[in-house]
Image (cartoon, rainbow, N blue to C red):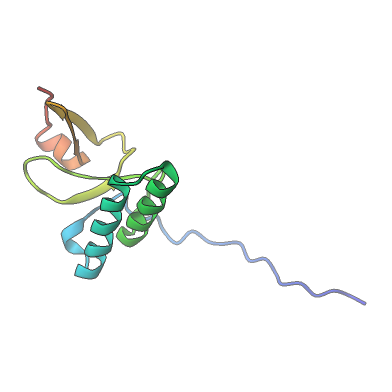
Length: 115
């Protein structure tokens, strides 16, 4: 007797997700989910919990990340962009003891310097 199995249909690419997004363009409920997830990631006691919170923020933001981490631009212009933390065009500089991430657009426009 023949066995019938479900056909495997190859998934077609649906287009690539963006690697950055302006947080203020998202609905308020998604902004709150992202804020809560980022706060949870900042306070996570271990890597597993950190990456669970990051996954929630990434899913809510609808962006693609290379290694499951996003960053929020924190330079003086206050653009509120979330972006792939591993984006080679992003920039990280130090302000005293604090690390300040810059999204690729800000890094091009007004690159922060360490002091």
